[in-house]
Image (tube, rainbow, N blue to C red):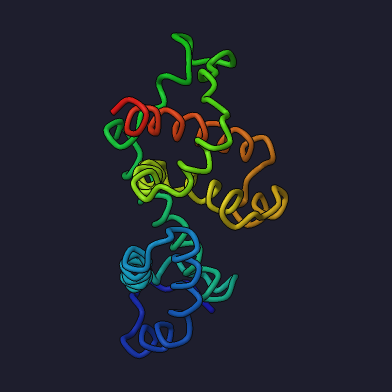
Length: 191
């Protein structure tokens, strides 16, 4: 296929939408974990492809080209979502003034009374606080916690599914546990 400076024809665009929408939606949903966001970004991909058809050189399949556009759009979403947005979540207490990870930041131990633990685990109000604390975690952290503790997946499987290094996986899990611990301390034990 030769590079052109004209946008896709309406017929070509409709064919691409028919042929590639499902694959792009599946990929977008996998990366964003939100159906509405996935639908929106796929629409943006087709609009962008329509406007910039001249940059498609035919060296790859249309799906490969559209997927590349999709990945750029999703990267933009994450950049906008998390750049400078400290109101969503703060991790400052995990780092010292030089930006280094505080290895000595260990929470005081909770009591390990078996009766108290079993009572807590059967308390609906505690589960509501726990769920609220889980919802406060960044999306990727929550995915790691869910897969590790709720779905009981192995670390290697989680790393493969989420495209994480082993070191990154363990850091995310550690940070998630510390954040959950702090949230539960504040919203359950200190109420």
